[in-house]
Every structure is written in structure tokens, then in C-alpha cells.
Length: 562
Image (cartoon, helix red, strand yellow):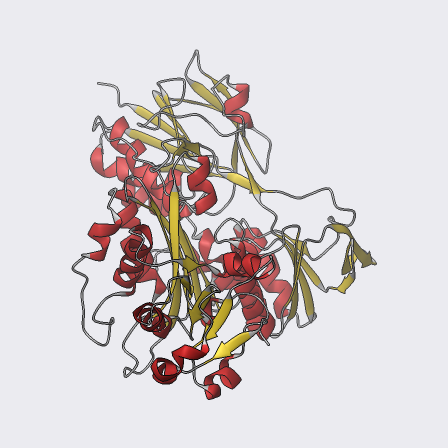
């Protein structure tokens, strides 16, 4: 019997995972991979750490945990998979079930037959038509040659200043990498705050403050008009507001899917150019599967099409494709838009929907911002974190979360991924039996605190303002009276809100409560607003009715302090 032929175009994340999984499930299949580059199954998400010299050798990004390079010989001898590197697929003949490809070095064409074809063609970085973008030392960071070229430039000792155009995940990861190597870095983005796809404006403002404290300039809301140079080498960047010196420029403004091959073959594409697939990762041609950065998928909460080009998504989809080709009917459930970033001592992450996305999807979102320690105050290494938890008012289902801080954020984020994926309500999350011991958590986990606070808000037990809401309220007529219940020493150490306020430490509030007006709304707060909650109880006990809380306290305030 003739062996079933499976042809895979693309040998990095989704393609390599499909091939490896399929070789285990169906070793009798004839599996061939065509990869246009020279490197296979490399860890592209590790490039910023390679550039920053955390990862010393590029081989570490292309080898197994045992140090074996994942090259064509490895795939042939270990997994019985034939791999052709430097092989560019140029045409799909769906009628005759074959693919034409050319050798990148010789231009020689060859035809590869298939019974099932897998498109794992990935995406490419966008190079906007900025004058000067073709100068030497203007980089993107997407392929192994990109990473090697950037690291070589840094190792030359000639890079003293750098400008990163784009403040998304890749751009901000490289911020740390360059800064740790002694480079003076500036970041320019057309949007006002960093990481706009990951966190909201308030979190973004705090990220901007954090990088500024490291000597990094962030210029939001500016358009790059030109990259300048001398002798063919970059010397600076001009925006519509300023000029910046640069010995190196990184273009990190986004990516676009590589789908011209699919388009030319007549496969169905989405309006954003990604390949349309069903839950089994089949394209409009049932003999052709697709996965990774070139396809659209489904959002688990909204059930609507979404594009999430992530290495984790690509690997998950590769397994699903392999299962279905091997005859195991396995659906791909979808994505939540989960992302996470390390930026110096901060970890920043998101899963599910933010409030704006939830409204657009037809939900009635309610959110809370809490500031929590990751461990008890008496434990060494205790770190802080800010959690924004979003739920639907009607169903009480957890819709999403954003978290940032110096504490153990990834653990909480992953727990919230499970909560959103399973349709958990805020009530169930509040009652979660999270692991507790002082080295790992507070007695009530930060996620528990966030869920309890959101329950109180949803149940009408407390009126609260998030920082943005309070700032807007303070700028309108008849603003509330701000009651700061911190000690005077804390005010000097932590800063003051930039408005008129009354400072009465919590321990003195009961005896001095009569000093406060009864005909004006009072908003209480402290460092993280835990004492602010106690202050509300004191005020209500004294007969004050129009009282509210500033969520997250001074620590969650993203704007300037006095």
C-alpha cells in the first residue's frame, strides 16, 4: 500500500509541531517539510533574550533540551521526517495535489505531491514606507538572521543609542535587552501609551513611568516621518515633534500574515488576509490544513473570528492538525488573546476581554482594580501587583483580566486563563481553593481578593471609582472631597493625589469624623485602599451615605502625583 503523503509548508512553530506530532501518531506516513529559511523549529520568542545576551548562543534557540540541533538531519534520523531547507514554495496545484517549490540558492524548481497539505507559512514583519528604512542598522526582529545581525551590531561596540519604533510586545522586550547592554533607548509609538494591545491606558501610563525610571524615553502619540543617516548608516529618527539620535533602529510596528500562496490557490481568506479554517483547522479545501500566524481562529468568549499570532497558539494548532490528519477528530477550541511580558522587574499580562472589548461583544461589563501583595508582608521577596478583573453583570461570568506588578503575576494570570476558559463566575472564583503557604501566597490569594472586591461592587455593597473615573469626576462641577487615611509620613514617601484632600489617618478617623461635611460626596483611599474600605465602614457607621472608594489607592494611580 502506498504511504500517505503529508506535505508541510513551513518548518518553524506550527509546521514543525505538526510534523513531530504526526510522526508519532502515524509513523507509516510520508512526511515532508518545505522551509524557505535555513533554521528549523527555532524559538523566535527568545530573540530579545538572545539580543540582550541572556541567551549566549544562537544554537540554544534551535536545539533540544539535550543540546541536539533540530536541523534536517535531526528530523530525518530521529523523527523520520524529510526536510528541505532553503526551499520556497511558489505554487499550489489543488487539482493535481502538488506544490511547486524553488531552491533559494540555485533557483531550481521541484514538484512535491501531497495527499494532505499543511500551510504553516507564518507572518512577516511590517516595514512601513518611512524614508530611510533601508539604511544599514535598521532592523526587524523576526527571523534568525535578524537576531544574528542585531546581536552582531551590538557586539561591535558601536551602538550607544537606539530608537525602537513600536511599543508592542516585541518592541518593549527589546527595550530591556538593549538597556541591559548599556544602550540609551528611546521608544516611539503612534498611540499614547505602551503595550496598547495588552493593557489599558492606565496600566500603560504606569509602564511608561517604569521605563522612564530606567532612563528610557517614551514618546507616545508621535508619528515617525524619517530615519536619517550618513554614508548609508542610520544616525537618527525624526518624528512629527522631535529628532532623536540613533546608532540602531528597530522596526516593531506589527506583522502581516504570509498568505499569498493560499490566495493564489483560491483558498478562502478573511478580510484581514488570514486563511479561514474550521474547528479542525481545515481550509476551504478539505485536503489542505493551515495553522499558526497565517490563520484566523475563534475567540473563546465572543465566539467571533480573531487573529492571535502567538507561538503558543501555533504549537497548539500544530497538534490539532496532526491529530486530524491521523484520523483523531480533535477540534481547536480557540484563544483568549492571552499575552505576558517581562519588563525589568515588572510582569505584565492579559487574558480575555477588557471592558471596551466586552461592550463591543454585547456584554455588560463590570470591572474592579485591586492592588495586592503576592505573599504576606513578613515574607522576604514579597512583590506587589495590580489586578483588573472584568465580569459580565448579568451572568456574573469572568470575561477577562489585566495584571501587572513586581510580584508573581504569571501564576495568577494562568489561574484566570482557566477561569475565563471554563466560564467561571466571579462567585466561583472568589471561592476557589487556591494553594496557600506563606512562601507562595497570602491566606486569601490575590485573585480571591479581586473576585471578592468585584462581588461587592456588583452587589451594590460599595461605590467605587477607578483612577480614570475619579480624575474625570474631579474635573467636573461639585467634585467629591478626597479623604486620604494614610499617615503623614506615607504622604511624603508615596506622594499625594493632585487635588484638594483631607488627611485623617485611619486610627484617628472615628474621633475626627465630625470634621467632614455631610452634604458632599467623600471618596476614601490609602496606599492600596484596604484601609480605605475600613474608612467607608467608619463613615457609614457615623451616618454618612454618599461615600465611595478609590480602587487600588495611590499605588494604582497612573497619573502624576504631587
